[in-house]
Image (cartoon, rainbow, N blue to C red; front, side, top):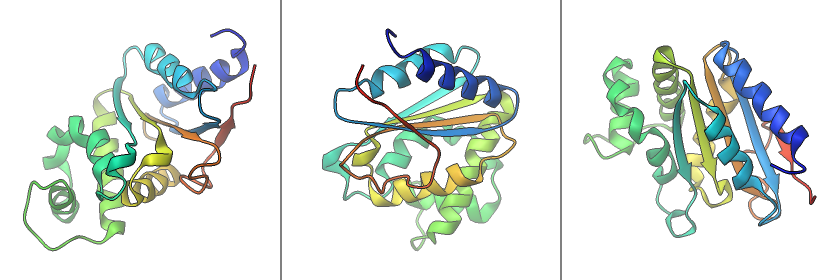
Length: 181
């Protein structure tokens, strides 16, 4: 990527550390059209040997609780049976795979963290979320919860969000502000 050497270096470092067992989180923020998607595509291309799962916030789905989380975790649901029963039931319920009362979001957050950690046991896991400003509130809360608790797993969580639209989404997580070239 022309003119994005420093940003690519940061992404490469994050990926190396996650592969070595030191999870990393990064929220790439910038104006529309500034190159956020190109940077997360760069990450996806560089993640050879890793399991890459992707999701994208969709404005028309902002009112559908857990729709973004479902996109991200759907490919990992074969690990669901490895979770403790309360966590497994919580995710099964929010993803429509089981019938139970709506679970507490804290339990859904723990279940998501456990699911990602289980998947990362087999091979490093790269989770990419584009257009995070359009995530439904429940998914954004869960991803922020998970992002603050990733430690020694082999997971890289990278989200791209537009500046000025949903700046509170994923607030408090490490950020990379993208400026014009």
